[in-house]
Length: 111
Image 1 (tube, rainbow, N blue to C red):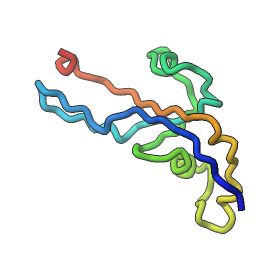
Image 2 (image 1 turned 45 degrees about the vertical axis):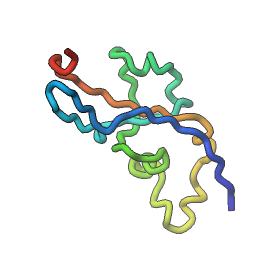
Image 3 (image 1 turned 90 degrees about the vertical axis):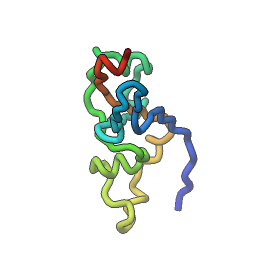
């Protein structure tokens, strides 16, 4: 048996945006992407820029955990079957993970 260490993973997101003028909701739970900061060695500003179109991000729906995102993307098989949990590479959880989503806002929402 092995012990899990806890490492902070910070997710900054709201699950919907509500504007006071248009009273429109934009659900934000779908179409997120996640990747380890060990793989994507860039700053938040670089990741958030329009010119950043890095590949190899895992598509996820939030809320989710890194482990669940990896299982949903077939990096690991069903963790509750046999000894699959023992095959998880724990070193990948020693670094933080990025979550990102691109949204398009109507110009009226910005006024």
